[in-house]
Image (cartoon, rainbow, N blue to C red; front, side, top):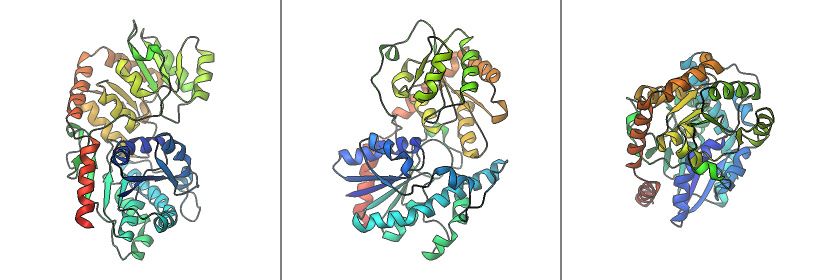
Length: 379
């Protein structure tokens, strides 16, 4: 069986889809993962065959319409969701011709699209093969799809459609206790932490004398000045601060803060020996923290995609962490939130409860069996 996976323009989307793609490849199926060219090295690093859908930089789709005119990011959640759907729709439109070219040489039997990869349903409909939608993290996509539908009206009309085709199966990695009240019925799948690796240092594998707080800005990193202030405020709590950041940024931080551990640190290695993870509201980071039962502090940078805040607020409501809004994004507020979480043992207990729940979810290999049955029924 040939399975085409569609990720998007960040390493996190690749990591989110890798477990199911790897399970398929390990079972003997042929697998290609398509995405914008900027993340092809991330796909290749996972041992998967990469395919480029566009060389256009991702910020172009977010900041310009199809005619190249500048667009303005809305400042309210409802319009922000529609805006997100719109720019992901523009990415999908730009992806179609390369994907159709791929299908001429390598016709997939199944298309698996990530949460916001709207080219997936269009391509599957065009080829007459099943379409599966897989969430790549625990964030909501409610209210986003209509924005993509509006942007893709020309493509839908060309296919004789009024709306985006529904998936034959929705696969969701969100822990059941954290799913939205009105979430669509879905096949659950256990979250598996994935990130690029390096040889671990001994300190990563064991707990130190002080409690450990990991600060990460994801694969893109954080502003140096802001990160320096955050490290100062959190370090003042008497904890060990570890900064997971791209090497260029980490080198500058190490030069200014003697003895700090900073660099490209595999989160799945250091999370089990950590007491708190502070992150940029990244979905992959959030689920990795939950997987290991570690409390988290999420700090939203903007309201572009309100789905981030809704999902992270549910983690806070469950008691497994705290979530700060963009206007609260200060070093002082982050330091105070860290102090609050480190002083509350219940946050660890609640995070561990979610970890136990996640461990009972079906693994990717089980979900793969459902995909095989889906293709067999439609053959």
